[in-house]
Length: 467
Length: 118
Image 1 (cartoon, chains in turn purple, cyan):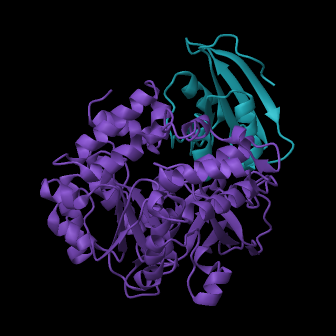
Image 2 (cartoon, chains in turn blue, brown):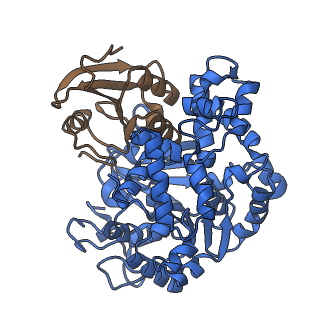
């Protein structure tokens, strides 16, 4: 095999040599080649997509650092292997994107012509698509973590099976924390592409130059620092789904490139004029009003039309009548399991507080509040003292309005709908400023008020020059 | 285990460890190092702990009980990452390599996510 698989070929089977790399890349399961010390020699494209690591990054590292399966603990089985085939029961791996994925790993020793062990071959099969729930068995649809009975959300849920069965691009819009990611993954898992990779890219997380290389890949030497060729996320998502979150933040140059890709499904890596055919379904999401961005000339109208093959608008939690109670119970059950606690429920007073709360950060905030409460709760029921201060204080006080932190984003979001001529930037800037004032300058607390991560707040403050 | 801070401006980090390397998974960690550095970047205190079993929840408890500001780990599930962020603990994740090199990079304030020390 040598030190690099790029030069490895299959010779003698076909009229001319065939690249082994290209053959392994087409296998729809993760393929890993290891040396006798359990160090990575090669990973195919499917495994790169599954783990989030490129071959160049993984090369030479111990497999447990990249695969991170639950059977990797203790001594690596490769080291003491007797060469027999091993098929591990379903285990989990943790990806670079912090996802825990159920997989089945099979391993076999590779031997040379004199039966000497020279390395190992591992096959990693993604089991997410196979894990059927009762709902799936009964109704042919796997709702996953989708919870809700309100008319607004039921309307969305009711069309998801049809959405999953088509191959059209999907645009999911909705406020931060409304579950856009969860819906996108549900669509993938219930589609014909479920056995393929689900690759998520945050379009707001990287500057334009890096994002282009991340999405479309690059050749070795295409720009300073490009010491190795990289496949890019679109190629990693081949035969699967790519999820472009925060697509409203996609820079103008990349909007054109994405549009060109959607026209011909060909990826042109940075530094290359040679295109690569890629078969992916695009699911995009944003919290920004794309129609408004189009009017302002900040988002291409033709790209919006292409992305909006199917458009799903997720309602904010405050408009999902009756769902807060369900979600509270659901999150309580999940958090209790995760924290290995036996918590029966919420006290009546806490339930009242939580049902009255407005959740500016939507489901993400509700989940965080419940997790916080479960982690500090030392009795069978969650009481008022187990709630974060801003929730307990914010809704207390006998109708004296809301407390220090709660209302900022909520009020501004309401006023946004009634504003005359205010741009999204103005509104967002105002939201940030008000949150910072109410949090007395503490950014982490302001981020909580807004229902954002601290990095999101930092990025937006930088964008608006509020540092 | 570590006691209170000798100076309020000090910072404390927890590193998940496995065989002298940063352990590959947060929830499967059996050893941790907790280190404290002063404002000048010098390591003032460093302690090594063996855990009775691997548990992400237990690690989260230790992180909070020990007033740890930052965590250095390999793979971590989003749920625990979000939880620690919610508790204002900064997490350097997907770190691969020897503990010594990670600790040195953290001490010098140059450690970033996804660093691979070869």
